Amino acid sequence: MRRANPASSPCRSSERAQASIEHVSVEAVSKSEPDRPAPIKAAQVVKAGPELIASAAHILRTGGLVAFPTETVYGLGADATSDEAVAGIYAAKGRPSFNPLIAHVTDLQSAQAHGVFNADARALALAFWPGPLTLVVPVQRDCKVSLLARAGLDTLALRAPDHPVAQALLRAAGVPVAAPSANRSGRVSPTQAAHVAIDLADRIDIIVDGGACAVGVESTIVACLDDQVRLLRPGGVSREAIEVVLGRVLGRPLSVGDASSAPIAPGMLASHYAPRALVRLNATHIEPGEAALDFGGRFPDHPGLRLDLSPAADMHEAAAHLFAYLRRLDAPGVSSIAVAPVPMTGLGEAVNDRLDRAAAPR
Ligand code: TXA
Ligand code: MG
Image (cartoon, rainbow, N blue to C red; front, side, top):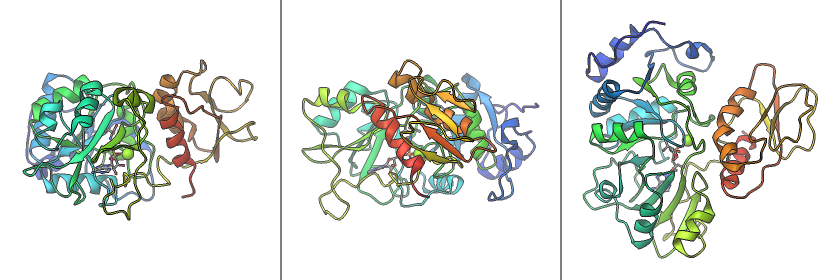
């Protein structure tokens, strides 16, 4: 495979699109899908290193789209202060534009330039940042994050990711980076650079490869907008760990109609994270022809395709494997994936949430 040096020629968006056509795309992009538009870009997967970080940061500052690793999943990043750059994210993902994005920052101090942190929000940031927790807070009056990234809301989701490549990229870019998971809307989230390439290489500028994501499910999202802290999405920090820091239980999101409500994370669409194959939950047996997503070694004798999220029933291991295994089981000829029951303890809440959405009617 031929690779041009991405650090050699930082350039403007249109030039970049032109230049990237000359790049040879990665092998992983070979999967053809009838519903895709003709390729216009061919983003390379490039191993993270100092030169690449500088180049990727330049692409961000000049309005381009950069896929990069975080400890949860790969993000599709753009300059959060630029409506135009953020529009590129929505277009590349095919994402409904009412769905707001998380602004990624290096730390609490930079987060406070954009959002208002009450005592709960500060306590949670101090306990879990950098890490897989997103805080939804009221926007600062002079917040520079674009209205499009916020989907017009007067609240803002902020996260400081705990991945050396993400941190280096954010420092080098010097702007908050809006980044949803780097998959096409509704599809399984990417935990490896090759997953991003399959979904998006023809639509973005570069894919920074930082290896497999250690956590494997997206960040936990909590809203700190009033005297309650509300869980909007279970994720990489368990409910129990958050409640220990708060010293009280997490509240539920209020309904959307309530004027004083924290908006339910609009990304919590019923059908999400969907492989092509159907997903059958809480399986007690495997039907002939089904692939098995096992947990704790329940179906060792299944003669077909079988992957065990965690033979030792470890929740962190299960979360880390979830999306990669769903992708691998979603193989040609597999019409259904049977999933063993996964307990709700710790990260099991996030794993079950993603499985429910993968199994939801489409
Ligand atoms: O781990 C993660 O959170 C990954 C990595 C890349 O950081 N990102 C991620 O982003 O999962 P995304 O766009 O797939 O999910 C963001 C969620 C959506 O459900 C969105 O509705 C919600 O955050 N969200 C963003 N801003 C919000 C706000 N102001 N109020 C309520 N929910 C918000
Ligand atoms: Mg997502």
